Image 1 (cartoon, one colour):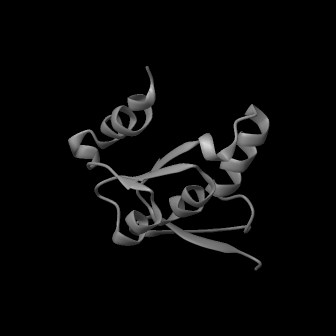
Image 2 (spheres, rainbow, N blue to C red):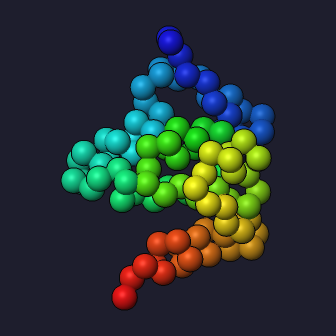
Length: 98
C-alpha cells in the first residue's frame, strides 16, 4: 500500500506513509529501549491508535472511544472526563506491582 489513512479526530483524516504510524512507534521504542512489545501498555481513543494496540502487550481504549477502537483494545477504561487514564494506569498497570 502506498499510504495509510486513519482518523485522529472526528473531522481529521491523517494520510501518511504506511510505515510511520503509532504501531511502528511502539516497535521502534521497544527496540530502542530494549523492552519487549508484549510488556508495553498503550492507551488511546481514536482509530489512529488501533495500529499501536496491535503491537503492544496490553491496549486500553478510553471510555469515549468508538466501538471500533474498543473492540481493538484489550481493555476499556472510563472516559477522559471520568479520569479514565488514571484509572487505567492504576487498574491495569500498577495493580501488578507489589
